[in-house]
Length: 190
Image (cartoon, rainbow, N blue to C red; front, top):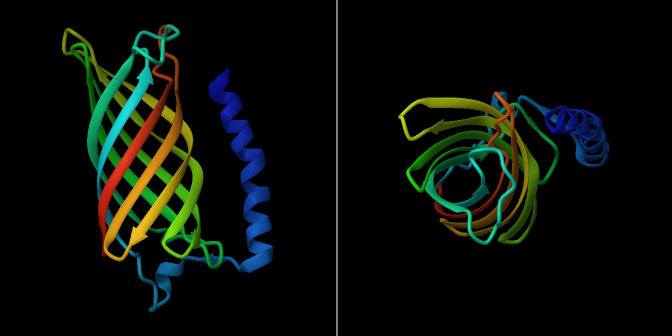
């Protein structure tokens, strides 16, 4: 039910947010077709901590931290932009391990980033897949939806960011991998 609620909430709010931005500062459809388009690539190392119970039970956030690390590729969205502030596509892969349990997350998170100088505040939805490998090396894959917010610092070529994401997964056999993650990123802007 919570999965359906998130889909409905996104469907209701996204068009209003997009319309407000479009009417105020201009909407560009397929900016990649413009010869002046620059994707502004960023590659970052990701360090994450996830509060999750892989067995679908309530957790104690102080004791159930699953550490993880991975990589992320960011670029300005080639499909559409909403004016002066960029819509950034964040594509990440992060591996987690906790008490012998392993998870791998593959995500696409479009973030609208409001910038002021070298500082940016971003937010947006996302979707992806979580693959969990149990103690018997049996993989289980879950489709996920998420939303998050980030604080970004771009100091020339140096990219620093902190981010918080709430991720909800499909339920399978009474089990889900819903989680809250805290992410730090260090990368290079191209």
